[in-house]
Amino acid sequence: MAVPKRRTSKSRRDKRRSHLHLTAPSLSTCPQCHEPVMPHRICPSCGSYKGKPVLVTEEV
Image 1 (cartoon, rainbow, N blue to C red):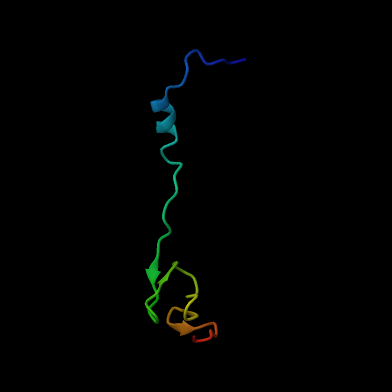
Image 2 (tube, helix red, strand yellow):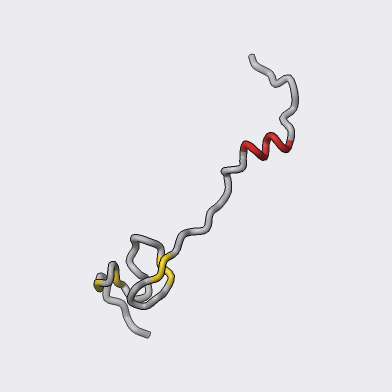
């Protein structure tokens, strides 16, 4: 059975984990109401997608 000859240093361990991090979601603005929206999704505030109304939302 393979056994490590030397202990893995913190630097080597952390270099291996350099890609394991959270990324912020990319946001674009809705062309109708100018609210931040995730791309390729229906706007939750006005209910439009690609400039066309898709959902009927209640105005408050």
